[in-house]
Image 1: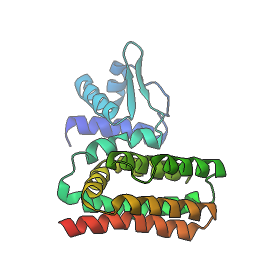
Image 2: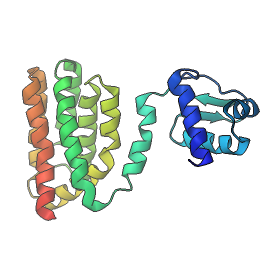
Image 3: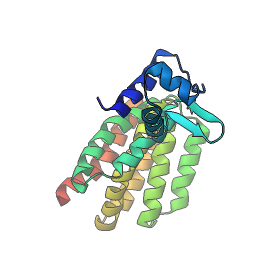
Length: 223
């Protein structure tokens, strides 16, 4: 194991074991290096790596702290990584979204408030019957983000948010090339809202699946 990797594993072990908790300040560099049997240089590299993935927070002049370890914070790295996807993997991202998002939509059916549903309806009404593709996709992102947030599962919400980049491009391209993409998307959104208003988890799940699968089906036909 590389020296830096060993240093990362040792710091990770301290956090996982509870020796270091969210918000805790790490001991001074010299003390921590001695305690872990590491060189100060390898410890420094490990701290830098762990700060990049939001495990540690280096505060100049104040020290290094364990972050909140909140799922949304930790999964920020996911959206950065998936932006490097190849075009031929978009279908795989859509397949993951098709597995996760309908489940989140079903979960939201018992939690989302009437006020939130009214806000989603107003959002669709404000688009009108013939929005631009860019307006439609921006609304689509906010629409699904609002529903997923209502699922009450922050990990699921962060995962789906992180996956939005690659699938957004597919949705834009579909909107530019498929004749009925706009009207179909608006129809499916309203069907999802209706199912949520009825507190019908299975109908909400089904419409969310149809909505994502229609993008997936279109993309398969273009490959």
